[in-house]
Each structure stands twice: as structure tokens, then as C-alpha cells.
Image (cartoon, rainbow, N blue to C red):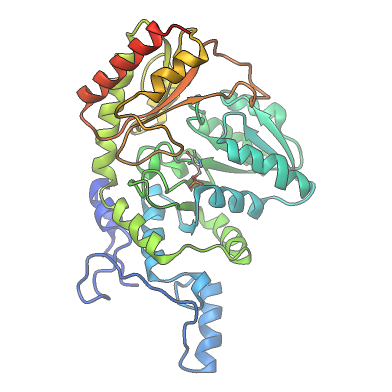
Amino acid sequence: MNKHPDSSVFREDTQVVVSGRDTKSYGGLINPPVYHGSTILAESVETYNSRYLDSQDGEQVMVYGTMGNPTAWSLENAIAELEGGYHCSTYPSGLAAISVALMAFLKSGDHLLMTDSTYTPTRRFCNTVLRRFGVETTYYDPLIGAGIESLMRPNTAVVYTESPGSNTFEVQDIPAIAEVARKHGAILQLDNTWASPLYFKPFEHGADISIQAATKYIVGHSDVLLGSVTTTKETWKTLRDCTWQFGQCVAPDDLYLAQRGLRTMAVRLRQHQQNSLEIAEWLRNRDEVRQVLHPGLPDAPGHDIWKRDFLGASGLFGVELKTFAKKAVEKMVDEMRLFGIGSSWGGYESLMLPVNVRDLRTASPWRFEGPLLRLYIGLEDVDDLKDDLYDGLGRLRNFKG
Ligand SMILES: *Cc1c(COP(=O)(O)O)cnc(C)c1O
């Protein structure tokens, strides 16, 4: 591939635009074409064999449809560069990326330390597939920091983090946890979706593996499912081999769309950050609200760590309401005009969802009394969003059940 000449010398906004792009091979096209293909013909038996060996050695050569093509490499190289890792591999969803990352580094008899604040399907994967294959999972308090040392066992192979946590937004002390993991010979995996590759640089803080649900900010338009795993030099081959062994690969049209999304990610994220901080501040001063769980606000769990380690905040946060009936909360959410009710996030449109994580937590004490809402702040005008929330909180307050 003709990579853009040395894009790592540029500042980040420029990198988002130029990284991974091949400026010579496609007749001057800005975006790489969509490469469709299973069979890739070779000129001879000799080249058929040698290109396979080259691919094993890490060269980006076309061998077979499942093993990559320029549409994939262009995106993967860009994500690896933005996260500050060595290489990146893509998957048909964020959850697929998580499951392969875990399977690649765990075997029967191993022990896994998993944050109690993890994305719920990750927890389900540990409690079903990994358990069935003889991997024991221990959940830990996301705010444990260096105290994780007391949970390490000789067979602990992976320490898994997600910062901030799903739904409850605890910011984890990744450098402290990474140091303990390294000392005990375990690798540190991080679900870095909330911050995107731009607002947290996982490898500067000791991560060995960084996972993105690219479905969210990289794609950015709620129309494609995609996951990525970025590695260090040391962890790349293990991850890549497992990816190929599982036959994991992504449809080229989806890779193309993800790359289109990526190029505007920096400017979108700045707006998400600005809108979400403004709404979070506004909500904090409302009578109906007990607590706003936005890592960028001083009261949020782990805020000091966020300030120390993160480069920005994204558009997803939690709101703990004062005590209201379930029906009143549903009345509020059902009738919002701009906030949609739905899973996922990272697109341009705002979303709102009541979340119940009370029954899921097993390691950390439950810290909330009121109902929890998860808000995702999109790119609408914040004043329109505030009007919508103002009316919604009115419905909540005035509900007569
Ligand atoms: C959405 C999400 C995932 C899963 O991504 P999918 O593409 O929906 O499978 C994983 N982790 C986090 C933190 C997420 O928000």
C-alpha cells in the first residue's frame, strides 16, 4: 500500500483526515474503492504459495477474502494510528471484536478479571461461552485501581477494563491496573468505545489491547455494525491468528462506510462533547435529578482520573433521578420529541433509555437509589434538546399514577 507519507507527523485532526489513505493506487480517488471478493487469483502456483507466507509474516497482501483487502487495511491502519497501537483488525460488530479479543488470550484453566461495570453482553459472554470453555471470571469493582493486586492469581491471564463503565460511567485508573497486570504477567484489555480513538490513548496508559465498538463514533451514522481491536507489537500475532482461525471478517461495503464516518469524527466529537457537557450541567441543577454521571462533571465517579488521563468527553452519560415511579419515568421517556428510545449510540441523533443495572452487579455495592436514565446527546441544537427535556421532566414530576 502507498500510505500517505508519514501521517504520524501531523496533528490529530489532520491524522483523522489522512491516516491509512493510499493516495496513489486508485487513480486519484480520495476514498479507496470497495473491494468485493472471495477468490483472489494468483499468477502462478509459486506466487499463490509465497503470498500466503508473506501474509503470515504480516505483509498486507491479498490472499483470500477473509484475510483482508485494501478496503479493510485502509480503515484498520487509520484506527491503529489514531489509537497509537501497532496494528488493528476489524470485526462484524463490537461484540464480535470483544469475544475474539478474549478468546485469543484465554485458554481452559485461565482466570479472567472483568470489571463489574462492563457492557452487559460482554458479561454474558464470560458467564456462558468462557465458563463453558473452563475460564473462570471474577468481577471487580471498577474503582478498585491498584487494589486489583489482591485479586490476581497465578493463572490470571487477562485483566479486562472498560472506562468509563457502561451505564454507570465509573472512570477506571488504567495506568494503575496496567502496572499490576504487567507485574503478574497478565495482559490488559480495554473497551475504549466511549472515548473513541481520539479522547483516550490506550497504549500510552499501559493497555495491551484496545477494543472499539466502531458501530458508535467511527461509523457515526447508526447504519453499520463494526468492531475493531488494536494491539501492541507483542500481542498482534496472537490476535490476528485467532481472528483468521474464527473466520472473522467484515463486508467491504460496511468497511467503506466506516471509513467515510471516520474522516469527520474529530469535528463530530467536539460537538458531542460541547452539547453533552451543556446538557449535563443543565440537568445537574434540576430538582428532579439526584446526580448526573458524566465523567466531565466534578461529582462523577473517577472524575479526577478522567481529568488526568482523558483528552475529552463524549456524548453518552447517565442521570440518576430522584425517587419516581417506573410509570412516571416511562411517561417521560415515551413522549420525548427528539430523544429516541433505542440501543446503541454514536450517531447524530439523541437517545434516551431507562437502564436497570441493579440486578447485574456482583462485585461493587449498588450506589443508586433512584431510577437511572442513559442519555446520548446528538448533534441537534442544545436549546431544542433542553426544551424537550424541560417538558419531559414536567411529565415526570406531574405524573399521577
Ligand atoms: C455498543 C457497545 C459494544 C458493542 O458494539 P456492537 O457493535 O453493538 O456489538 C461494546 N462495548 C461498548 C462499550 C458499547 O457501547
